[in-house]
Image (cartoon, rainbow, N blue to C red; front, side):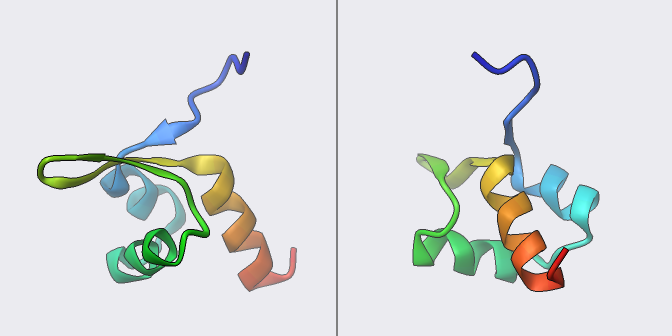
Length: 60
């Protein structure tokens, strides 16, 4: 069990990584990041998946 927060709202991820909302939405649509949906759309996103995508983009 993880002791850190692993699921974030999209606004938190945009702020933390400086990413565009459309980019995160594309990753969700492509299935490269896990998300939990609600009636109004995406509610939370797995931060580990986002970190992997950012590393892939920056080659870090």
